Length: 299
Image (cartoon, rainbow, N blue to C red; front, side, top):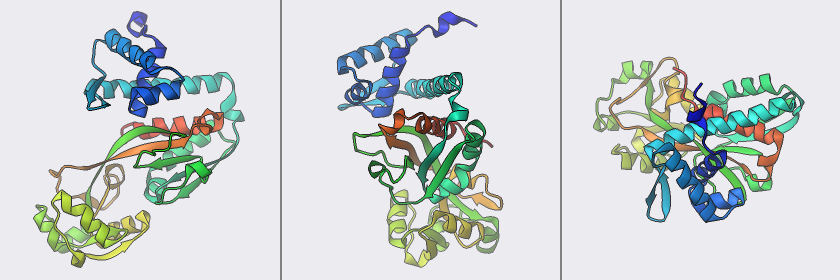
């Protein structure tokens, strides 16, 4: 191994990772307990060391460059590995016990989390994990849950949030539905099809309109406030709906529609209280979740 190739300063990496996760130098400085100029210098030195620009300034904010996003993915893995090494060295994974409450949407809880939960069971068998499958936002501040998986970044400074994925969603329908109603070829064709709504039809119409999909209440004859129930209706051939690609692409008997259509991209944030993030039990699950949700889905 060429050890010279990895001889950068870990403090610089921490400054970069905190700036990327928090969205600004000032926020990163608060998290790290340092001054903003110090964090800025550490990020600049890492850029010099790597010979690439990690951020570009847009107005008053910092936005990751493509190179910065690639580096961030790797340094998150390094941070997760460092935590796992320290846990193993201390013999803590087998000793960590107690209940941890995770809240996520019912779709996430039912279709995406099970492999991670099995892995967690393997490495920390004495943990008790309680999944709160809810589409509403549980209040981490009131400790209704210890960890939340959400699609909106929290504004409260006492919450710690990490962007772990930018997931993609597409339109799907069951093969049985398409055999009965035909394959839509364009967005305009969708106006002649049935949709399954997640929530209210008015909300779905307002959501679809900016995407160039013109539908009315006549297109919505069935729906549910439960994402799992609504997706089951799609799989049973009762209509069309958007679904995350890592769920829809693996569902048997379901086809992705309009493959040339741009996906709907939505962020996946992992959130916990800053005090809880220092707990070995919460940190283990948080970092395990982060690593699991950040990796590409298996084909």
